[in-house]
Image (tube, rainbow, N blue to C red; front, side, top):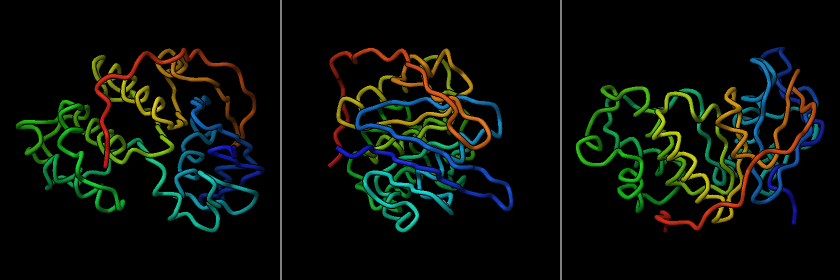
Length: 231
């Protein structure tokens, strides 16, 4: 079976800056890899390249069997990116933001209500304008978009940032459920105590490249309960 992510000598630039400078990465089906490294190492750029949002100018780049260089829009249908800043419309409610994001991605909105409840965003919060949300609540809305899309590849950029202890635990549960259903994940993090236990491999990045790999601490997931099924 082909890797979910296969980058070979991938180069991507932001202006004249080489955000990726010959990056090599293979992520297997069902695998979780955590990216570590200082600011500017290329972690976020690698995630954005995998999502088809940062053009790869040279080298090879495939995600879910799709050539990212040639078909970036097709790749976006198969990935869910949780970025640094939740892309929410402040004048829309929580529920409206979720439905809008799902429709924009060509995904079903049938599970929107169930996902909001699971993320603690149901009831009055669902009808609350995004402008009035706390940073942690905004983070949960962005995570709800990823969960509801049920992507084959989760791309999580500092996913624990802005979440309280309960939110971090819930994130781990949701990721475990997605993995049990066949998803893979690539996580960029500055919090190894939170991220490494989720990982099969930990990849050190620097200078826009993957420099080394070591084993993570992920254990076999427990039986899945409360799984959100998306039509």
